[in-house]
Image 1 (spheres, helix red, strand yellow):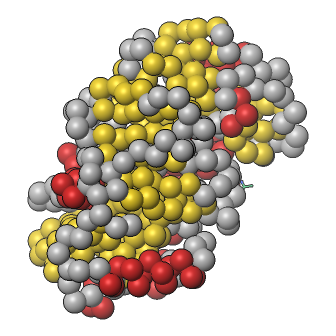
Image 2 (image 1 turned 90 degrees about the horizontal axis):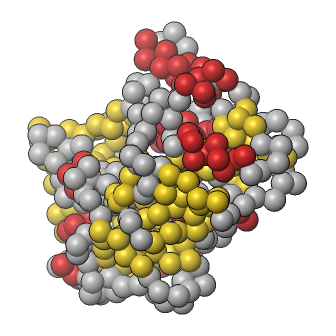
Amino acid sequence: MLPIATILALALAAQAAPTERAASGSFSIPAVHNVNHVRNGTAAMLKAYKKFNLKPSAEQELSNAFWSELSLSRKRQDGSATASPDPTNVEYLVPVTVGGQTLNLDFDTGSADLWVFSSLLPASERSGHNYYTSSKSSTYKAKSGYTWSIEYADGSGASGSVGTDTVTVGKTTVKGQVIELAKKVSTTFVSDASDGLLGLSFSSINTVSPEPASTFFDNAQSGLDSPLFAAYLPKDADGAYDFGYTDNTKYTGTLVYTDVDDSNGFWEYPSTKYKVGSTSGSMSGYTGITDTGTTLILIGSSAVKAYYKQVSGATNSATDGGYIFPCTATLPDFSFLVGSTHYATVPGSVLNFATAEESGKCFGGIQDVGSGSQNIYGDVFLNANYGVFDASGPSFGFAPFA
Ligand SMILES: *[C@@H]1O[C@H](CO)[C@@H](O)[C@H](O)[C@H]1NC(C)=O
């Protein structure tokens, strides 16, 4: 969790800010590594499958406990089974001030909602979280008749009411930002360390009804020196989000940019080839998205199989619901095309994701995307690469860490 001194300093800074849009055009905010976080490969994979409504591939289904876990949680809809709460999945938290109240949010480039734990939730569901109380904010305005809802295929999700308030991220304040107050959250969120999400995908996939809301980033853009933000998420360490500028002390070489197709609402680009070490292969038909809200890298079955073919002792485990290998194995690097020219490389050293359920085995940072046709490049990609999300264009840029 965040040191109290930091929380206080941020809260005080926010209070001292003038009420008009107070933008300093370039600033960095901490992405605090959650020290209580326990990496769990199976849980990380389940979370991504729920978020993107993915189904296991035929081969995964043959194995597997993973599939039964998904259908177990499906049953929860009609009350015939209860899934155990997932362990905390959120690794990086960013302090954000909403109506003067500090919340630690999960910055998610794979969704567009800014939703927060609120006083509208039953006390038992918000315990352990900071939560937003609209009656304690003089700047809150309700948006009556508006609702929001994030629903996953298994019946889990979050939903609630809608209002506007002043939101401060680092040195940028947006007045009248649409905020979504949780009235209902499923166990996945209750047990997570974050107090809500701050969506950084394109506003088109915002779930507020009857009219979708603009994201914080869309509203803040005009006050930034450049209409972009960058994610710096080093493995097992504190990182940062840089707004309005890119920080060349955090990467090496030159940032390379690729056009983004925002028609699905994501930071999406073609991603049709990969390399395992120096052996290359095709992922034709696949695009890629960069998603800070997903932990793992999830790619098509044939590519994931080709990767683990080069890891001695690797198996697709029924117990773990994904590829595991002896923890002593040396992992090859994995590279993939971002757009049509530039390969991004994720070194083998960051691809040993976590200890697996099977003893002596480790869970891989690269896993199967199942029924998906978008490769999902999550935090494991950004554990070794600085990622730039540029709304002009739009485009996505990256360079390996310095
Ligand atoms: C990891 O997550 C899975 C799925 O939620 C769960 O079944 C398993 O018990 C977890 N493992 C640990 C060690 O917490």
